[in-house]
Amino acid sequence: MFLKKYISRLLALVLAVSIGLMGCSSTSGLSGNYGQDTLQVIETLTKALDLPKDAPDKTEVQSLAKSQINDYIARYRKDKSSGGLRSFTTMQTALNSLAGYYTAYGSRPVPEKLKNRLLQEFKQVQFSLQKGI
Image (cartoon, rainbow, N blue to C red; front, side, top):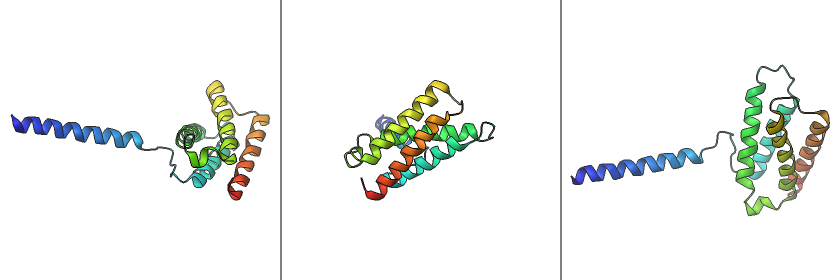
């Protein structure tokens, strides 16, 4: 009787730990380093914006872009050290615009006006990261 109770508690603990660890894993490849993650997201999003309509890997790249947008915002929005930086607020504006477009229009090509604005904001973010602001 005691052994059965012990095994069931051990099994519950193992399940809870494994579910917790799986929930914390990131499929977007973000490392936790704000500067590196920001540049990685910019690189992925620039690639997604530059893809032609008939690119064979378009859905995979857009899926990765959406995943990185979600993970990036979730990770750094509440972080006090990065949340108040100019680079983060500019990046958040760009990500909100692109995520809104993907949500509303799916896999349609991004309009040139929006693409140009996003690329300009990415340049501002890169400049701010170099300055440390």
